[in-house]
Amino acid sequence: MMAYFPPNPNVPSVLWAIYDSPVATYIRESENLFPVLQTFHVIGLILMIGTILLLDLSIVGVILQSRSAAEVGRNLLPYTWAGFAVVFASGLILLAAQVGRIYENEFLRAKLVLLVFAAVNVIVFHLGSYRRIAHWGTETAPVSAKTAAWLSIALWSAVVIAGRYIAYY
Amino acid sequence: MAIQTTFDWLGQSAAGQYLAASTPAFAAVQSLHLLALAVVGGAVIVADFAAARILFREAGPAEIVKGTFPVFVAGLAAASVSGLLLVSAGPTKYLLNPLFWPKLAVLAVAAVIHVALSRVVLRQSGQAAARVLAWLSIVLWLSVAIIGRWVGLI
Image (cartoon, rainbow over all chains, first blue to last red; front, side, top):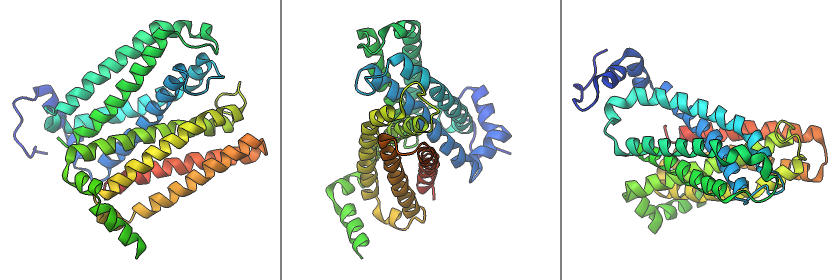
């Protein structure tokens, strides 16, 4: 199918080719498939961010203080990863279907940058203080872990907020 | 009709007028609504799966249900306030939306079931009842999220 608009010269040709492909065009123009993907994106988000926030709140000592952070992490992380798989797969498809139109969207760019920061925070935390999480027991988490948890709350919230603004700009 | 009057009042309130006129403010409230959903969803999933003895099997389910209940209440409060603000930005749209009342009805049932589940677990008055309520709660909250997404689409 022909694209409705001439290629935006600012969009890299690879991305335009993806956007203009029959599959991406079909998804973009589908009355049901697009909102179904959005629904999966929201449900994946709830599962992923909801469990991340609970682990963060337990690390900073707001909830579940009687359980060790190691136990909370061990129980919740599979759900976080399941949510991530759903949100990431649906997000990639939604992005492919729209990239020609939203490539220059500043909130999309902000979201992607924030995602990188959030991912770096996860990696630093897991290679650092999380490796000794079993030794914290139900004692207070070290300052480095609490800092990472607060940072995680802030960054993932910012990712969600930036994502919501993409649709309006 | 009382509902019509209430919705008209919401639409004419300062918050309603402001949100109807400001795209960034409306998107900010939607973002808050989305984050509140994540908080509610996380608390519900953890409490329900603990009650069904799938999660936190080392701990008693009562401890986990009790520990996540304040998170559930806080998330539900934030979702309700932000939801009310979203309605105030375009009350007629929601009043006429065929999925709006079904969503609120399922939400009300889901909230009642989750509270009932919490009571059953805290009183330790029946493992089988807790399992049934837990799965019912999961299905109902999932329905709320799905119907809610489609409220904004039709």
